[in-house]
View (cartoon, rainbow, N blue to C red):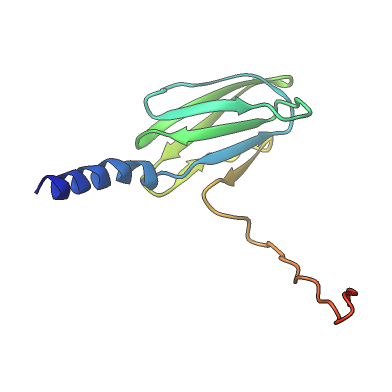
Length: 124
């Protein structure tokens, strides 16, 4: 009985983690500072790349609700309205940002076929 209850408890505690959609926001200009209006709803943090461009933000939903993400870029301050539901994270469009879901692969992935070889070991 203990194993059964432990299994149910573990299953129920992992479900909320699997229900939200993470989002990647790419700014057209470098981001100096970013914060969320309500950090109980969403966690937002910048990602620093090898080139240190500081243009990528990772949005991790915590619970459902509506909040705003305030970004200070080199072009000025921008406010992004974000709506978190159980299955979808939506952001009000802004021409200074691009949005990508991190939970789904891009639609057009082309996987090349592996090379074929002859009996002598030469590539066709």
